[in-house]
Length: 296
Image 1 (cartoon, rainbow, N blue to C red):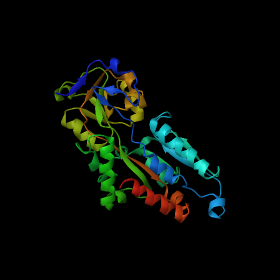
Image 2: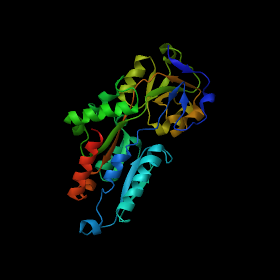
Image 3: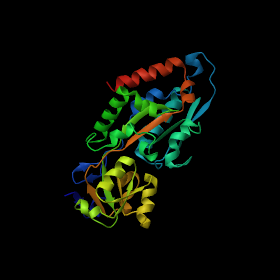
Image 4: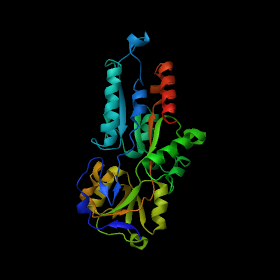
């Protein structure tokens, strides 16, 4: 039996720090602001502190998430402010949210091709590109986003194959979101049999396999398209982290939520190699060492 909330309307009131769902607090996506503050000199150091000529530069950050998402308000916007302050305004940043530069599954290539300096997206949006990294999306790979992130990063440090998969870009940080639940528009899910024949959004191959095992029909779809998909009946529901209730306004189109902690997605923040190499060597070295220290 799944743990199903049959009257989702009672869960639509926001509480401090998240939404309370059957005693489970849905934390925001893990904000690794410590690394953001270290990398904030990506681009260049000020002339006064480095003794070198510095050109003004505006760093482009691309995100598939909507503008008010906590990853933006808690990480990227403060990051941009610190960049500007640390460089006396010589280095600035612009956040392009909501797929403004391209679709969610193009975000990695935006950085590889130099269209953006940094980007954030799910590994699962490009199936087959990150097969080794995708192992961390299997069930029971961390009870929450924090534990899952610790596992993912430890594997990244141990196995060079994961770094090798991120070809053409430099990894800024990798992290996991909160566990995925099943959101449905009209159908309550009390058992696996209730999922048979339902069209459920999937964000990755690992999630697809889970849904197929339950008899559902997986539909590959970025999170930004789920609201409209559920609203128009293109899909019957979605497999997604509980934080989407507020972060993507999914409460408006959700009739039922089934808590199962089915899996956790992995996400990347990558940096264009040219942007990174334009940093002074001493700043790149200091940022890398401090980032490693943060995780030990």
